[in-house]
Structure formats: structure tokens, C-alpha cells
Image (tube, rainbow, N blue to C red):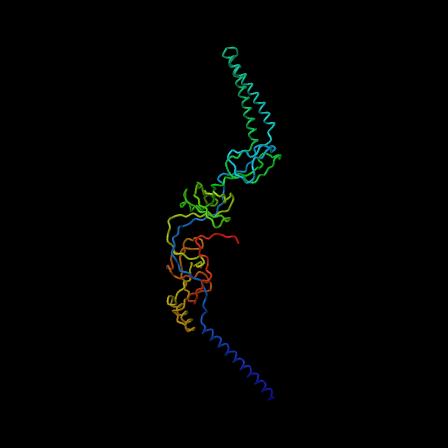
Length: 391
């Protein structure tokens, strides 16, 4: 029995010793964490700077030729001759396609002969009428016959003209869609013809923008095909009616396109500068944290600029590390009022001053008084006019 009590006592002593060692190690770790203080959070930061801005209206539009048409015959027929090559320029009135017209031409000659005969009869009877040889009624009948014959000639000539498809205006031809010897019905597309210089861009804007728009206003257009090139133009038309469904107004601008880079149907980004240039304090949009109760930023500052509560927390953290609090940067939360945006930038209307160091990335891990270190090896984009790039 005594041996059992000795064993139990030994087990209890072993547990007590093990528990004491575990508690001692845990207390040392806690003391180490306290001594280390709050870790420094790496962030990027930049000073708030004043820049001259003009307010911009942005829209999405589509390019459209000043004059463009899909050419097609008004009547059916067989293609006799094609006078153009795909992808070439043409002049106004140039013959593009001729349909087979031998029958119509022969009929025109027959009708022309009948008209010539009617004209001869009318002239002869006119002389006889002056000599009182025929009645006035006969002369009137001859005049009517002549007019009818000439009308038939004109009608047949118009039908014959429809067998010839001409370019209605100067422009650039697309891909030919018919071949010689092919029978085509009325309305069959032969080729597209587009006048490419200048070129229109059509876009819609909300009705609130109407007060800032006027004809002749300058616009800048960027097409995704040429992301690094800006095409300039002017507003040439504003629709006099607002769409009742969308409350948008249709606007058209005209662009110079001498190299014919822009093509009808292309997607385009439109920017219109309005109003006078103003000085704004700007920051990258990544610096702003948006919340239902307001927008705020984190400013890199010293602990003495914090509130009393945040200042004591920061001082405690730095004293635990054995450092002077006034040498360490900390984050300070500042509410701001934001204004218009331009590219990657946003205007700050109130809340910060020029030159203040504002955290531009890494703020999700911050709170008031968090010690920070600035590492600007990789900065967020801060381009006032970024261009899209295909990856």
C-alpha cells in the first residue's frame, strides 16, 4: 500500500513540474511579444499634390462613316462587267458594275426610232396646219403622240441606266461580293462604299450634361485598336430631343482621319473637356477607402499628431521596443471629401493639405496609431489619362 502512495506522489510531482515548465515558457513568450511591440506595416505613400484640372465628360461611342452605303442594283439581272477591285478607292460617278442589257438597249433603239418618226410627222403636219391643210385637232393628236413616244424613250433609258451601278460618292470600296456572269436579284449587295475622312463618332450622354455641351466643342477619342493615339475632333450635332426611355441625348462629333485608321463600327472612348481649369489636390484612387459613413485616407505622421487615445497606444508600442515615439511614423485616419476623378486620380476637396504623406496602398491592415514603414518599390498607378492595353 505504501508503494502505491509513493507512485501516486511521484506522478503528481511530475505533472506539477511539467506544468510549471510549460507556464514558464508561455510567460517568456508573452513577455517577448510585449517587448517586441506592434510590428511595422509596410505601405506605399506619396505626398498630396495640387494639379490643374478641367472637368471631363466621358462617354462610349461608335464610329460611323460620314457617307457610307452598301451598293445594290434596283433591278435583277446578270452581271456583265465588273469595273473595280476590292479594297480600292473610287471617284463619285465611277462605273462599278454593268448588268447585261442587250435586250433593253435594242428596245430603246426601237422606241427612239418611233419617237423620231412621230417628231417628223408632227413637224410635217405643223407646216400643213399653217397652210390650212389639216385641222388643229389633228395637230394636237400628233403632238400628243410625239410626247408619248419621247416618254417611252425616257422610261426605257431610265431602265437601261439602272443596269449600270455607279459610285454615288467618292470613297473606299470594300470586298466585292459578285462575279461576272452571276445572276443577282434586286437589292443584292455588290460592295460596300465608305467615305472614311472625315469620320463621325456617335455617343450618348445623360441629359444633365446638356448645359455643358455645344456645337464646335473639342473632343478627344481613343480607339482600343490604337490605345496610345488620341484622335481630335469637334461636336457637329446634338440631337434636339432626349430619349424618353433612357433620358439620354444623342451627340455626334466629327474627326479627321487622313490615314484612314478609324473604320466605321469601331468602339471608341470619348472625352470632352468642359468648364475652366481649376486647381485640385489629387491622389491615386487607391488611396481612398470608401464606406457608407464617409471616405477616408491614412496619413503617415508622427505620434504627436494623433488623438490622445491613439497617441498613448503608439507611445506604448514604441516604448516597449525601446524606441523614441517621435522617430517612428504611424498611420492616422483622416476623413476627406472627394471630388471628380480623372484617369487613376481623384480630386480631394477637403480633409488633407498639400504635401501630406498619404498611404496609397496597404491601408487595409491599418488603424489609428499603427506603426508603418514606407516602401515605394512598387507604386499604384497614378496616370491622369491611362490607356487600355491588350494583354
